[in-house]
Length: 279
Image 1 (cartoon, rainbow, N blue to C red):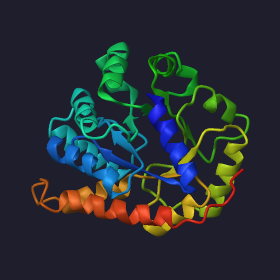
Image 2: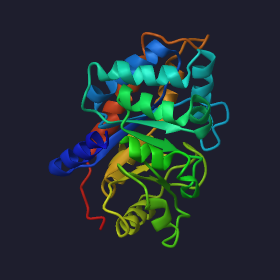
Image 3: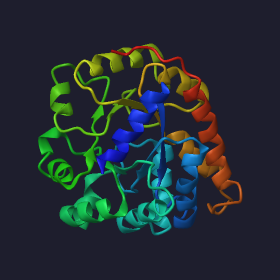
């Protein structure tokens, strides 16, 4: 399954550009709209897609993504429905990598072995589980690797050179560099510091480095793309969903377009970046 991620980053290297990774929450504001949004992302300019699994206690998420998760849960979204969404997406797109991002509790309740079997069958390529540190690799990471799914780790500004080898030990697909300390969508990253951090991490791994947290505009995306292998955007996209909803919180005729227009703008920023050596 990791072949899709590897192939996409290989293609991006051949094009001489960074990739755009988009994050949306499964089931926000309802299943059908969420599926339509995900289906529209590649044509709008997304190179890889992260799908958030809504959870009642999302400790690393800022207000925008927390609210998206609450809307999804209220609409009846479950982990099973999230896997069904991926399966439906795969009927029309066999190439775009799909990464599920979330927390361990829903997976634990679902059952690890059952989850990995069903995720692979649905067409999931990788997992980001933010509350499982490397010390807990036997819980999910190692079984996921055995099942053929990439286990993608987060590195942060506080992950020093002593800690990095532990973080990277069983990481696959790419490394997700969190550009700020704190929760998602809470600040704008310092581009110079981010590029320096990417360079430092690249001394420890040959995996691509994707940078997320705080990227909101095409200009932010362009600046980060000059030093990173991919740029991740999440909070801005879930906010685009929220601001398109009617007063009752339901999708409108503008919801899908609001997301795809922003993705197209972000993609143009990423593609306009001057690539600089990060090694």
